[in-house]
Length: 196
Image 1 (cartoon, rainbow, N blue to C red):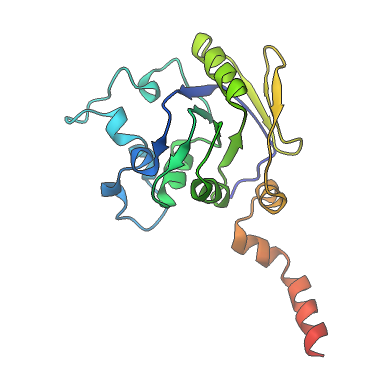
Image 2 (cartoon, rainbow, N blue to C red):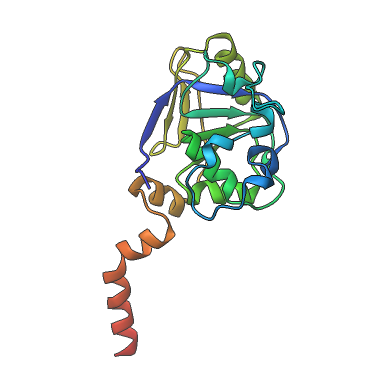
């Protein structure tokens, strides 16, 4: 995975609440077993009509909005435990998803795949959505080390929580297996000590 330090980017505001994993990546696209190619079907049924034409009113089809940060409505990632939802978001190019609430399984899947879920207060989420909607060029800084998210134009900011282990993995670009491989000498030393 790519190391995560600080992301400064424009953002895509998607106000929809209670977005479940089937809306993020519909079940009919889950046949593949590798992580590749899921980004093109992110929010497929919201992005395209039955003739595969882009729906002009959906935010991902509006050229004024871009960036590696998705600002989502409350309760993002509910529903089934499919890891493919995180694959689709990351495959599309998002590095950060901001919401006032995430389903636990989605949050863990995101962290395991290099996608940072930033949980903020409902008031701060409303502020982010309003600012980016009014000015698509608004930039947001997400600083993992400081665990903060900040609007660059005004300096308004908020802190967010993250599991210390997952923070370390993101900072080093490790998934769980890569983390274990990075400390294999310590593991071997421990095994040697306890087996004598």
